[in-house]
Length: 214
Image (tube, rainbow, N blue to C red; front, side):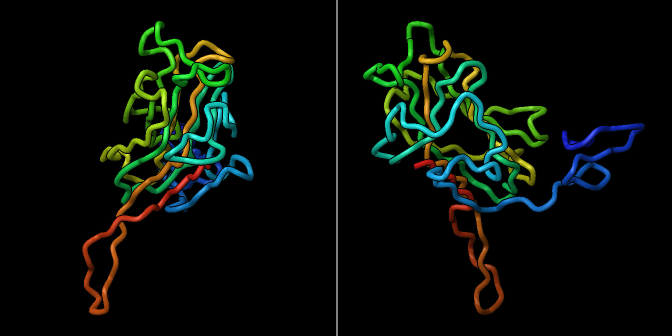
């Protein structure tokens, strides 16, 4: 009822700060922003990064990306969660990913003998501030030993205000093992233009959210 943004007391929502209305409606949300990550991880763009930070433990993820990226090598939970966004016109989510490496270095390795679940990175979305997470895609380490740029259609259920995305590695062997990195995350959206006669032209694509981790 309160969409994870407040508490239900006697059938009525008591909303958290920043939310209002009978069902704790979301206020203004970002439609477009970019983050080069050279100056740090912005709390206005990412609400949670656990088990990782800026780094180049798996290299610069060339040829698809360059420079620093969001690199995970911590113990416990490894995940990155975006801020709430307005994705009502969103089409695709795209990013660069690497899990371990062919070189099996100390800062970027993966034990494939433990099965495909070990080290797997999952992309999910939530529309209720993380109470429930829904699957978009899974990424097996054996397919991402070198950097790859991937893209997925955003599910219809995620095309709304208040959507968050999460990159999560549910199973790993701890510090110094099963490292991974993401870079150049893009959300592609529709934007309608109005021509001189006032009629709507066909929608065109452009980047509404660009989180550049290079």
